[in-house]
Amino acid sequence: MPVDNEIYNRPGDIWWDEHEPLNAIRTAINPARLEYFTRVFGELGVDPAGKSVVDIGCGGGLFAEEFARLGARVIGVDPSTSSLNTARSHASAVGLSIDYREGAGEKLPLEDHSVDIACCVDVLEHVSDLDAVIGETARVLRIGGLYVFDTINRTRRSRFVMIKLLQEWRVTAWMPRNLHAWDQFITPDELHVVMRRHQLERGDIVGLGPGVKLPQLLRMLWRLRRGRMSYGEFGRRARFVVTKDVRVSYAGYARKGGIIGPNAR
Ligand SMILES: C[S@@+](CC[C@H](N)C(=O)[O-])C[C@H]1O[C@@H](n2cnc3c(N)ncnc32)[C@H](O)[C@@H]1O
Image 1 (cartoon, rainbow, N blue to C red):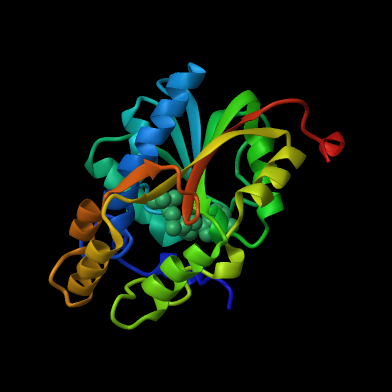
Image 2 (tube, helix red, strand yellow):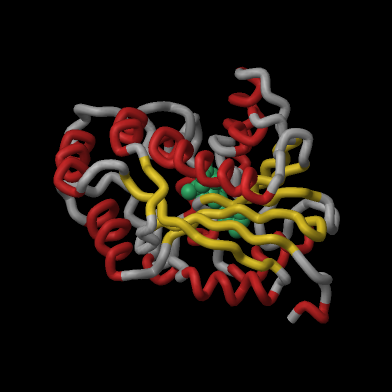
């Protein structure tokens, strides 16, 4: 069964409200993403302040706002009108200036070679045409520009954690049933091949995973399912860390080199 992206069109604030499932992205995963990407920026000598950054599949702006706080000029792109409305109102409420645009990763509303950094977090596993999304990312990046991403690996472990535990088993599942489809998960090698085809030279990857052990995670899921904890609180307690284990979530970066066009294939 394919991924159901209609979830992101639900009315109301499905992103910043602590009692909404997607809020757990903010409290659980954002700190680890930020820590890792900041480390990459430091190692590569890239200061995001003043740089143009596109956040592809920005949803309600949870991560776009992190870049804006680092001083970047941020453009957030997402196909969901209602998510973008939430993102715009939140940015305005907290006094951040972010240019939100409706569009899909497969056809970005941006000029060729117009951004310094492209970010795509928890999105690649939701798109139907990975090659087109990576091709578009490469098109809009300047030569030498940086691509930072995270996504979900396609392994037995990710089937157990992301599908069985979080979507299917009644006692522990809290994600909508078709939020993820296991066969749309992407192995690091598959992503590497697609990125190389589009002149994106990948660096090392790291794993991102909960900072608590499985038994504690199961107890927390049980409490979450019974309404004894908000999603925001669950995320804070499960707070992700950067690890060597890339069997479920992994993050990485790539640099744009060479020329983009028909010769790139
Ligand atoms: C799991 S959410 C991640 C949101 C955001 N990146 C974050 O981490 O907070 C997946 C997002 O991908 C968006 N999306 C789905 N299909 C897409 C596509 N083809 N191109 C760009 N974004 C897409 C959805 O609308 C949704 O906002």
